Image (cartoon, rainbow over all chains, first blue to last red; front, side, top):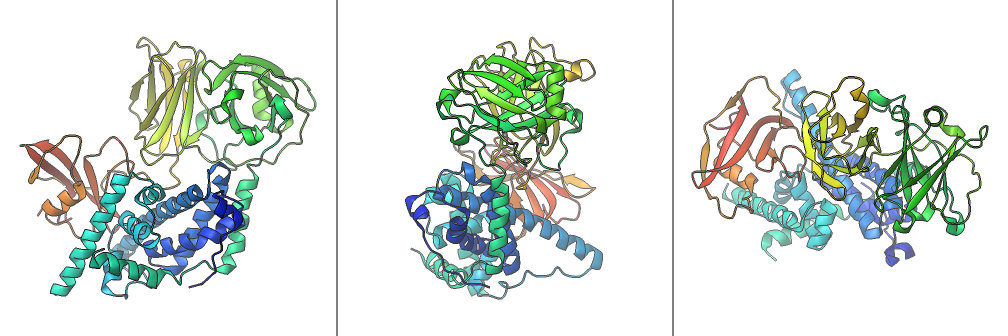
Length: 175
Length: 386
């Protein structure tokens, strides 16, 4: 795990996209955090976030402003995580079928407290929606843009995620 | 804020705040991103004449083959208007056509266009005049076949100049490196007298599906048919005025598209085959969700009538919740996803069920008995449906 300082430069404050380095400084860490939450794997999160950044860099010419670039980076990160998640699950299932062994649990986050455990069972889009609303503190419209969905869909994802978390926490308490 | 929301916020910050990028990876990532971006850099702008010059780079995506049907006969490249935008240019040898898509160029430059193609050994390969029928729409013009072939086969020798008829001309520019291009998220198709022309060989879907925008250049076409490589047809009726834009649920794969009128659909064999354009749907972000189940033996179970009233037809219920509440055998970890694309207009009322990444069931929701019903189709042994 790595810690870096995140600085705002003039381009970011002005709302423009700015150069690749400043874009990287401003948002790469956010993408890594999102990827970490979605994959539960620190190393994989680095790979995903960097792949997402490279893709955004290629599109930088057509991005309107910094917020748009950030939303595009988030959306790409979510899509990459979803794709990798599907492939990983297929691979784990195939290994299990071949070896008859239980699937390997994802590292790092599995042993955290019950809220984390519950959070990790949520589908990727619900987890992303909760990340945007409760970690990034994005508005509903901003979170919807980052997730590439409508505001009503975003609300539904957040509500479903919270409901599922609540239900799992109450279930754990009953046990 | 509820207790769960407060705990969630605290847990997210406690765990994620210390997470950051790996400094060792920062520099390579920026370099990689810059490489991709530098290849899209602008060529030139000549003051008010708005003449663009672009080196021709035939491979659409560097190192990746185009659809087999037209790999030797079609060249695609980008003409850059600098800060005014970019135009896609397609040269089709078989149809002797050159098409320019100016939809991404500032509108005031989209009135009339003259194409002037030059090469260092042959200063005047061809000069073609064309008028854009609808502002901002792609335009195609017939070109000499030999000139078209040279453009496709010797792409690095030529320049393309687009002059809107104002004063000034472009000076020759050094050719650019080959530009790798990435599939656009909307495919422009032009229906013209010589056949359909797809202005890119590939298109990638958006969340609501594959966007096709079809332009009737001659005002003469009323229907379009899309043929997937695996068989079958998809028909669309063109609107009398303006281009038709549709978000379709085309799966990743290769397709042929043709325009026709009065029901006279061209055959798929020569010579009519040349009226078709081919394109591929690529899915780099893995948006497509196939409804096909990953098992040999499937069963259709008895319909489950839920207690959810139909309500307002235009406001469907939360199908995921409905399924989890009523379909026995679904596990909390099972992932429910809409087939096709995440926000497709079609197949909204269905969900695939994936367990450990393997699709084991499809649930179809229907309005019957005054309430929502669920029809499960499941893999044998999945345990879904009781």
